[in-house]
Amino acid sequence: MEKINIGILGATGIIGQNYIKLLQDHPWFQITDLAASLQSAGKSFIEAVKHKWQMSIPIPEELKNLIVRDVKDFDSIPENVSFVFSAINMPSKEQVKEVELRYAKNEIPVVSNNSAHRMTSDVPMIIGEINHSHVNVIPIQKKNREFNKGFIVVKPNCTVQSYLTPIYALEKAGYKIEKLIITTLNALSGAGYPGVASLDIIDNIIPYVGDGEEEKTEIEPHKILGKIGDNGIINNDSIKISVTSTRVPIVDGHTACVSVKFRDQIPSKDEIIRIWNEFKSLPQELDLPFAPKQPIIFLENIDRPQPRKDRDNDKGMAISVGRLRKDSIFDYKFIGLSHNTIRGAAGGAILNAELLKSQGFIS
Ligand code: NAP
Image 1 (cartoon, rainbow, N blue to C red):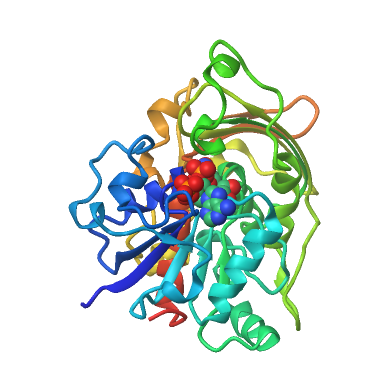
Image 2 (tube, protein in one colour):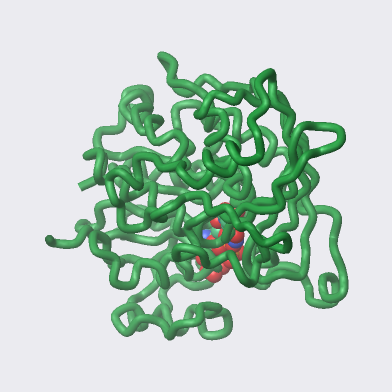
């Protein structure tokens, strides 16, 4: 099969680099365009990332001498690029919104990691195993904005993955949830490169993650669990969510400590574990290249999940859960873990792009 040419906006950052690593040898997509800020534009990629290549692999040979484009040079994108992954970070969300809209208007679909469009009602925010049907908002978005081939799809905040899929699996099995109290332990790579200063984080925990992290982690699930209306997604806020986010000295892997209160029926512990272990969805049915075989892996050992040992489960795409036990105030509590730069960012977005291709939205 001839591969689809794709571009990466923000290719020099942590998530951009993760795309480059993860898309090596991808069966459907190949990178032919790299873009970043004016600081990198006009340089070869190897020169642009000279002091900041963070991946455990060498820069792929075919990308080393590719000249990095200015993200805002909209007309310079090669004609053969079918869609772009957006991993840009700009001083304001309004700037990111504008850039992503310009690409979509130029008929280049955008699959984004940025939060700028996450709560835009006609932009679907997708976790493939939960709300894959939200791709059907794309025709509404195209109509609203007079796009022909272009559109924007986003994925949620990197922390949401660590707990929402296990929660959704329980709801799908008929056990409705009333409220959640969550404390997250966010990895350093979540802050991009160079991120948090070493003297701030070594031997320390910072009880604050900026950029509206707690608000995003509380609100985004309402859209993901929402339904499609005439003009976009109608949010579903039936689950009340309270989040405390902290930054911990871990390189990769966001952990979430979750307390759950059910609405009426309370499942047994064995039933919850059975539901999690058996949970599968459309990405698994379609056998998409980046779909984990088992999206939720329940770990029996009392001291798991641990970021260093469990974040790479199933190529970093599975959610590892453990420590399921009764809660003395709510009904149950558990700990969820997902790889923030893979499942929570580049890998999750690649899975979304595979879903879009399999549903005929990109070709
Ligand atoms: P990062 O390491 O800081 O990289 C930012 C990228 O954006 C770089 O390629 C940078 O290019 C480019 N950029 C910066 N200012 C720009 C400007 N004014 N105009 C155009 N491009 C500009 O950030 P990151 O961690 O990769 O995050 C990228 C996006 O993914 C962010 O929106 C972030 O919120 C989101 N995200 C991150 C994670 C995570 O775990 N890290 C998870 C989910 C979502 P230069 O190198 O040329 O400056």
